[in-house]
Image (cartoon, rainbow, N blue to C red; front, top):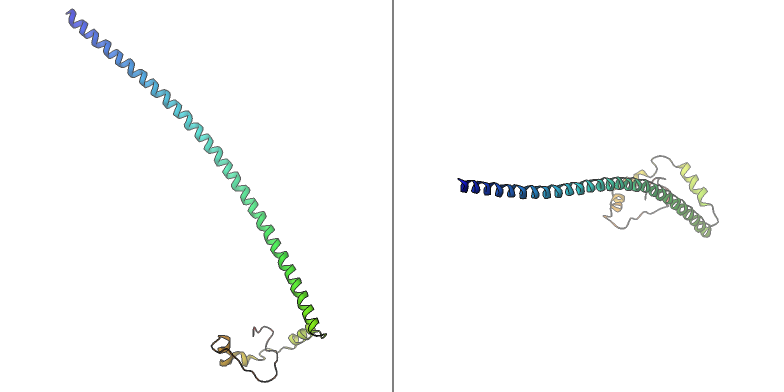
Length: 154
């Protein structure tokens, strides 16, 4: 019986050693899990910080975009204004060079005397329409040239 007891006692010690070894491994795994949890929490904090920075940058960029667009639009309007002044000045200088007559006054007077429908027959003429659509390349109009309409593109 003593031999059986020794055998049981040996088995109990083997089981106890195995349990101790498993407990040690569980503690090691738990330490690793705790370390991973700490790192995950650190990453979450970093991600939140990055998200906050990205939101701040996005807001700043949107503000800059509005400012730049406003300045761009303002610059474009100044450029157009300067171009129009230059074109008007150039036009006046060219007309002045061509003749001492005041063409601007003549043009204003002609526009004021325009009668609705004047020259409409020509604009509606099939031959004229063929010239407009480039079906024909030459339009022969004998006679004196006169104003068709202030809004006429022809």
